[in-house]
Length: 251
Image (cartoon, rainbow, N blue to C red; front, side):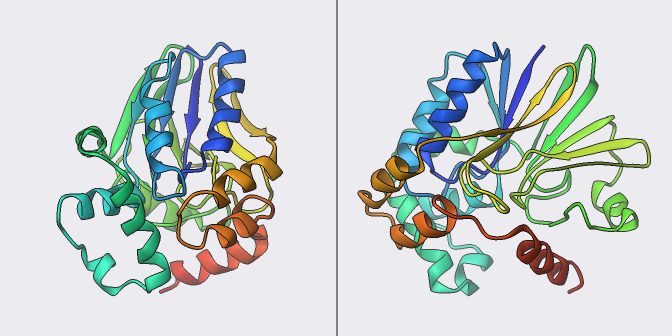
């Protein structure tokens, strides 16, 4: 079985389209979408494209999906009440673009997904950690902290996302792989994802960034120009984000 793990699309439809073209060329048997499909500039179209995929898709939710779903359900989480306005606006806008059918679809997404692979063994897919969708860790996180975050994992391979940077490391006999981000990468432009079976392949897909920028600017997404400048035409430097996540871990 060949599995494509697509994480952190964040409504970047052009990036997702390019990745799915490559997924189909690779004759993938299963797609796992690892959370944070939204918020982003094309939330409705992004969910629809994944739901209508000819390749079977299994979803798990990320913190972004959860926040958007909460607003659609008439709830404001503690995060939403205290977050800066520039963080809240994309969540609120994305919630407004979606329809009841999307709400019903998203409400069914679990926290984790387990697949028993005939060659790779049991694989656990989670957005951040098996315990929650918000904890952060990177390739620089200490082994001791990572062991605590993983908890009692009954899998030889754990696939995660959330921090938008690919890595492949092992701790206590467990291989932990970050699939990277399809739609909001840190460290380099393009779309990042993971191909499993039988090997573990960290993948990168190039796409037409200028055309993507044009399409995203044409949406009503809050600060669409900033999204294009920071997440499409450019990407935050990896060392800058590693330092930021490192400070968050120490709090």
